Image (cartoon, rainbow, N blue to C red):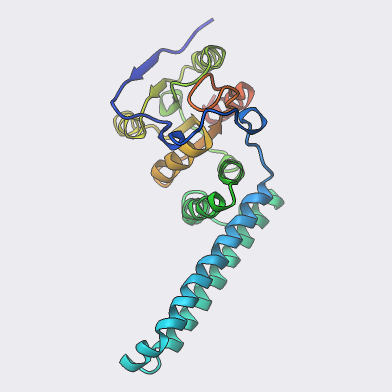
Length: 262
């Protein structure tokens, strides 16, 4: 059976640095951070409210001084804060409605390739305070993938790029190469996000299927998804981060098959 050619690029710095603080203990649920999508929506809304509250407190403290510069200024800023907060809450509601209704009601530049990428980041930052980072990120990535997959995009075999990390188990790596070989798409493994970006610049794919843990996937989506379509497959980490990671090969093949035009 055909197997894809694997091109391995090494650099001094590497993917997985997000796990540098790992204490070596087994990860919860064997490194499977699956979570319902509602978890992301809750943290996204909470992050919006928390940010609005922080800005509101700042305005409350400095409002009198701002009023000395221009008397209506505090009122203008309070009105602007209320308007921005309302728009963000409405945006989250539209995202949730799109996800659960099965229909994307906004163009991709306003959803999975737009503000959504920043919203993922803010929700992740807040989740760290609750020690829910990986679960919230997993939920955010699942929502992103659902929205992106619905676009029904098709590309040629030479226009799709599969990116994988070096920490896959041998079984997972063999499976990826077999799938890629079956559909005649290239596979690249890079040890650092900057290498992944360089490969994308040089290859100029029209779509990317990327494999990474939740933490590295979040960084990759923020860097790339705003520029070209990406589907992100997260991994299970039964032996801890950056070692013998497992993936859902059936999901990978479904995405590759769905993207490659027949």
